[in-house]
Length: 315
Image (tube, rainbow, N blue to C red; front, side):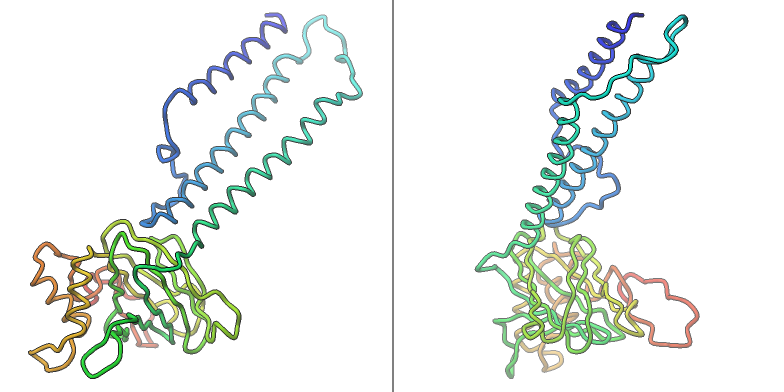
């Protein structure tokens, strides 16, 4: 095989591979996730797409480099009766310019998509549909719903204890704003399926930290949340649960939280309101389970030798 024929075959094989990808009609969502988890928000989806695109670009660059290497191995290997050394060249200015420009172009493209993806993840609407107060403390969470009012005054709050995981009930397909604050040390609000976490500081205004973020949950379900900042003895057990529910379930839940429970004469607790909502909306099912289904309460026995296995329902 002559050198020109070998070059033509390698070029045609590479061209065939590129054309096959272009005419396949695949979108970026059809690509492998390469280990990136699937999220439940548009922000998480955008981050996954960025990861997929960056990984595919890295693979394409790798294939091109490998192709050039093997092309050089095949075309320029020493042949029988050939010269002892191949023809020596000192420089190739056009090729050197390409080798300089291409890395700059790659860095620019990667930087552009990094910035635009970050902007999507951190974007804030001026008038979100729902705002919740998230207050972290050693070692649990307090979720408040501004604009609500329980009988006797004050807004609706769900406060976690060592016996009960706090459940943050939120509606799907609504823009939600989370206002974060700590009562003591630095914590971190991390809902795993959001693929997003943010540190929770005490006195965020004085510390000049951005303590707000927004997202939209696109599917119903129960999603475990954790503290992602080492904050003390029970940091590893500082869990919560996000319960994403349809709008009618969310509205009914908050209505119950703002009324008195005739059985107790006191305002409905989170568990009582979820149970009452499930009785009223039969289609709610597990979404109205009174206790957390994704994690268990913390074990405060400091003599325990190992972690407890989480039990669905939090018991």
